Length: 542
Ligand code: 1PR
Image (cartoon, rainbow, N blue to C red; front, side, top):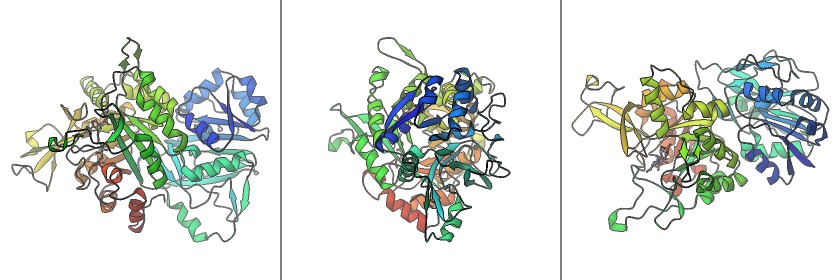
């Protein structure tokens, strides 16, 4: 069987293709409405904004053929915004019409007591039937979600032959999947959900709709409603070393060279694709690649990180983020690429999110000097408009600055038990650009708030003081930023033992914890960290 994927210009469909090919099926693209009826098996991927997806479908004449196919009984699968488009409309884009296969309007998550978007690994199972497993969706499995909008599970009216698998986020229960024979629509991304996701796609492609399950622990089913897990993320700082090889390196307060006494070389801790594969196998919930320097002046299409991503995405089925150099660029031959085009090139190679560092600080400066008015032209705004806010991560590189009293600075200062070199009791966190080499007149709270207003979907919060220290996360910094924004915050820098992960999750509300050196140097594995977290009652995906 050949699997047809609808191509209407949505974000990262590379991963979906990789997952299907990995399972041994051929893939072809549907590029005109007439081809839909001829498909043997059709997948409707959805990434980005409901309005963008539905308006593109309407404009290209896909709506009617797609509706007919979805109801034809032939194998049909829809993913993420794909499931939302099956309803009549969405509050995300009230003017845009969905396919209207199911009644109802897609809603936005409430952010009063939780981060929005809903990013990470959550449960999804048909809870009304404990004797059957549908499309491999097992109650104790976790699947990768990334979205701000969803269809609430209450008052849902579907034809009686459809089953609904539900997911809970905070106190909201929503539709995680809708299924019947030859029909599978998921809010989560199965192609990014590790082994559980591959099993689900395989069950769909092989027509394995339902399976009897015996001896299922009903307690397990109860526990599986536990919701979103805390994520453990591995980070690979990538650059070329002095011999010109692309290596994973690791800084000590951002200095990636060995001490002069031992040669002063760039630290080489391994090869990017191999390490990424190892972390996937150890259970990393995501992998981040940061292009920390060099090779930025080569033509975009030759950027070595594109090959790294393309290779990694072939066998690694968890979300991949890429950062470093995401901004408007000019190739050596004078060709200009907008930041959105640069991001698009990375998405097509297999990245799911891009991370923006220096450019986010410049954009925030512009935002404040412009009376907090949005221009619509910054990298954050343009990428978020085209690919959705969930695809835009802001990477912050702050440095602690001590002051004697809060009046001494106009920036957000906190009282700290860790006094400065001259006994100072207050500190603020200064933003930097160019990998910590240049300091700007902006603090982390200002930066995070401005980026959230511009449409960023997540914050990757490094800390120059803790980076490579193995001394634990900067809890005060993480609390400060987490209290300032609603978007998820990834704590980073300083992990040295498993207990540091437990501490950051218990002492702050951070959504994920990222680390580098501890994993590269095999001080402990991701598996060890997760086992420790589970024993400490922190919900994780094992
Ligand atoms: O400014 O958009 O081109 O992005 C550059 C990106 O590269 C930024 O995300 C910036 O954080 C990163 N970067 C630049 N220089 C360095 C460096 O180390 N010299 N790396 C650098 C930042 C910090 C984390 C690290 C954690 C965890 N490294 O990536 O992985 O601190 O480390 P640990 O667990 O070992 O303590 P742009």
